[in-house]
Image 1 (cartoon, rainbow, N blue to C red):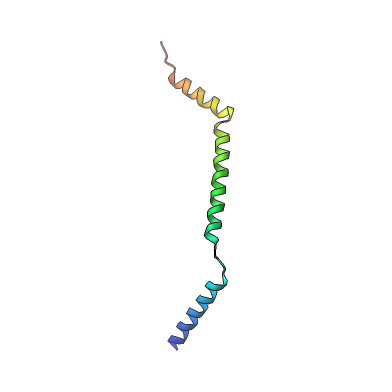
Image 2 (spheres, helix red, strand yellow; image 1 turned 180 degrees about the horizontal axis):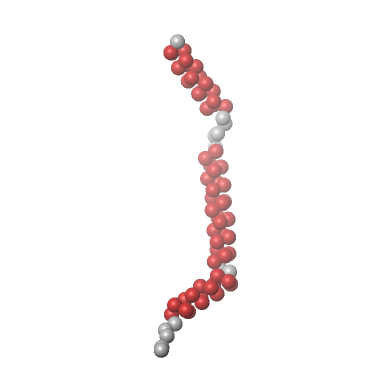
Length: 70
C-alpha cells in the first residue's frame, strides 16, 4: 500500500508539473522587472533633475559652505 501511495504521489506531481505550462515564465518575469526598473529610473531621473530638487540641493550646499564671521 505504501508503494501505491508513493506512485500515486509521483504521478500526481508529474501531471501537475506538465499541466502548469510555465515554459518561458522566467524570461517574462525578467522582462517585466527590467521594464519596471527602467521606468523607475526614468521617474527618479526626472525628479532629481527637476528645478525644485536642484534649487533645494543648491541652497543646502550654499548654506553648508557659508562661513560666519562674527
